[in-house]
Structure formats: C-alpha cells, structure tokens
Image (cartoon, rainbow, N blue to C red):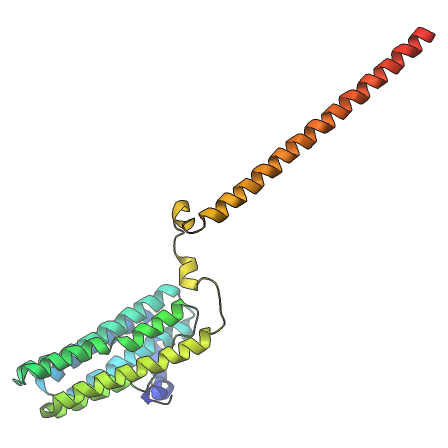
Length: 266
C-alpha cells in the first residue's frame, strides 16, 4: 500500500552526498543510527514545547539517520546481522521518544486526563505494526515497512500535534486507528507470504534445542514403538548370527571327519 514510506529512496538520494562523505571518511553506519535517536530525542523536546518548526527539522533528521545507517552500510560493504539489530533498536527507541513527546505535550498544556490516557494508548498501538513485521521476519516472510501509517506518518502527525495542541485527542485517535490498520494490512500480507509453508520457522530453528525429555513429550507411544522394533531387529540379527556360527561349526566337524577317514584309509 502506498504511503509516505515511498519517499524513502527519494530522501536517501537527496542525502547521497552524506553517504559519499561517510564512505570517504570511514564513518560507521552505527553513528547514523545514533544520530537518528539523538534527533528523535530533540524532536520530542520540541514537541513538548510546541515548537512545531523545530520538531519538523529534528524529525526529518531522525528519518535521515534511519535512512543513512543502511545506505552507508551498503556503500561501505560493512552490512552485518548485528547492524540490523541496532537499526531496529534505534528505530523503536526513536518511535517511543516521539510518542512520549506527545504525552508530554498533553501534560504541559493541561489537557484532560482522558487525552493523556488516550495518547498513552496510542503509544502502545504504535508498536503493533513493527511487532508484526519483526514476527514475520522471524517466520521467514519479508520484513514489511510502510503504510498506511508507518513511522513517517507518525512523525508527521507528531509535528501537526505540536502545531495544533488543542486537537491532541484527534491526533491520538489518528495514531491508534492508523496503527491498527497498518497492523492488519501487514498481518494479512504476512499470512499470504507464509501460506502453504510447513516446518519450524527460521527463528525456531535458530533457537537452542529443548532437552530430550521435553522434545519427546507427546511422542512417548511413538518412541516406545520405535524402541520395540529396534529391539526385535537386534534379537533377529543375533539369532541369525548364531545360526550361521552353528552351520559353520557343523561344516568344520564334517570336514574334520572326512580328513580323519582319509588318513585311516591311507
């Protein structure tokens, strides 16, 4: 679904000179992750104060940092799995700071308690789209981004709320409804991507194996049956080996008798 996330690569192209400078100077992608979090913290402060222009600038920098860490990692050829972890932590912390800024704005402007409670609920709802995306990635589906209400839309909503704090309740409901809609869209896409797949998910395969007795739970009958079959097979093999030995001994005895008879005849 089209959303403001579609502007990501347009924005990254505008920041191409920063990517080039980072490659020349050997700047770590993690530095830009940290810049994004710092910009989000400054943006949250601007939101609390109602400085919407400053909030816009800081949140634009927050999104820029989120774009640059991946772009610099690819350009320098230093992408690594732990970089994915740091990127996700940075994004989630930045999202939390922005939503905390809205709650702080509600408190500073003496909004009704119900409005503050609504914004706290919106903070929780805003985590749902990313939650389902990370679950999807762990299950082997694509890691989904975008709308209809992703992090870019959340940043824009926060800026508008700083500009029009008298409508905080409306913006709170926008965040909740948009987040739930995005959660539903991503969950449906994940279901389609994983339809027909069987077996453990990649995240399960990477997890430590359970103790043998736990792994055998619910399979006792099957395990006992397999053990009985193996025992019967071993007994059968032992009997067959004994019969072969007996036949060999009998053959040796007949041969010895023949040799003894030949010697007596001579």
